[in-house]
Length: 209
Image (cartoon, rainbow, N blue to C red):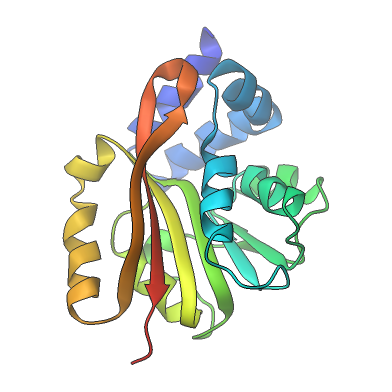
């Protein structure tokens, strides 16, 4: 992939929010082609199917957190979901997502600094690709619980390697212990097939407190 692979690495090695944003600005126009065709990015479809196992209605209100160019939104749309909002830190990635006309609302937000949305805003929150190196840390889990309605679901991927490095599991277990959410599934699945990268695919039910 040459320079495209260099941009991919730049997103994982960014030291500041500004450098991460610059990397995505350069990558946004060809992100879908590079990741799907070049890397075998299967996580969006797999995660959407995992969430679908738990939601009772296709009319559920879903937040695609860290939406990027909208691949998860497309995957949800293909299986019948149309009430989906998008959130991302990169305006350039959001621009690409907007062109697909699959989201009700697009929200620019740095999830690592908190999510400026009311409690119980969504029936489900899905986050694919953002819980990884130099992106969003485990502190965001509390925010996912806060903005998701009781008995709703939080579904996310964590890239292997980053899962261990940033100790996401510690926060996941803390939220289980204080009855914020209940683990429904944690699966080791392919993430980027052509790069031999796997990830944890997790689904949690938000509990009433």
